[in-house]
Image (cartoon, rainbow, N blue to C red; front, side, top):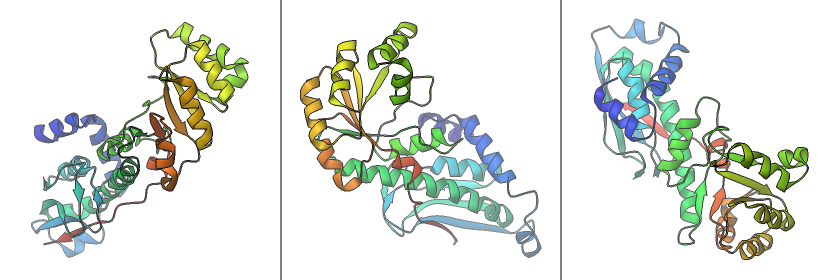
Length: 285
């Protein structure tokens, strides 16, 4: 991996070594020999291809796709930056080098690029839907195993913000924790006693739990599966004493209705677990 690509990945908040390891594993899945390309193209033949958007949206994952190409000694030149809006027909990146290598890189690079751009594009739809309300779109841990850092990066490219990266960096007290502990208060006090400086969020299903969470000292509350009317009342009850996040059953068509209640965040698992692939093709020029 070149120093320039390493710098791009680092600036994006990604671990260059982790990206390289992922790219190596993905390439290894295709085996050692391309039995289609090797009989057709000699080792000295070269090609130039263009990664081209086939729809409008937001691009994400160009340095990741470039890392795949780099492992095969290909030259990848981006023409846009991650997070930019692109239109159908726009060239996103060119790649050049041995034809066999271009064809080996094609599917792996596209798999990553189309998925991450799909996440970024879906995120942007939600961000646009709540524009001007003050609410922000936030992701969840509903990510594909091994791809969390990349998917959360794509969310950032789409204008969203990240929730916790794992179980280690913030506490989220959910319904099962509360049931096992005996109450909202007991669960919150147990976590706070062991981790006094950690960010702790409490999931509340009812307004009564919201009041209990506030009384316990919570500064971050997740409103789970509440109606717009209940969320409006929760915002009134909290009165700025804690950040509020709406979660559960949210859909794009009602995102703005939820946002105007005054909540700070909308938690949207669909950004990562249900985003459609963004249509990108690689065409030889």
